[in-house]
Length: 144
Image 1 (cartoon, rainbow, N blue to C red):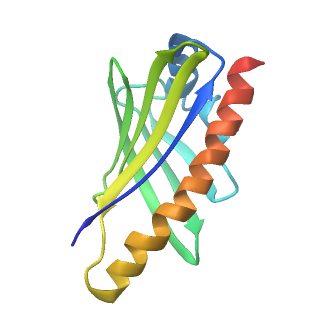
Image 2 (image 1 turned 45 degrees about the vertical axis):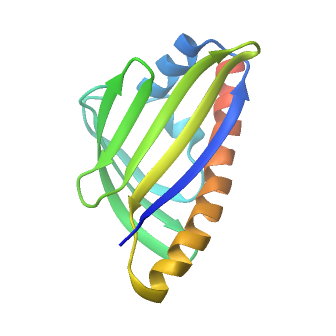
């Protein structure tokens, strides 16, 4: 099994503090940037950053699965670790001249064999598009 990684980065015209405050808010802010790929989104505990547990159903590319993620926080961003698989997503926010660079990256242990080849090839492409849409929504939300 090989690690599969998908990543999207966008310049956002807002300070890192403003963006991180938005991203930490899993109850009200975070649902505003989800795409139609996410359904049954819920906050199971917490709701503000570290220690929050969220769940949702995700469908893309003909595949569907449920996620239950625990949120970890550090100075550079947020990590969301799935309790049901090896999936981890990471939001990183760094200052730059125009405001901030925001990166959303996900990785997991992919399948082996020929199925794994397709997963490593096509899953990152689809997720990069979805992550790009989420980053676009984030940019609009924090600049409003």
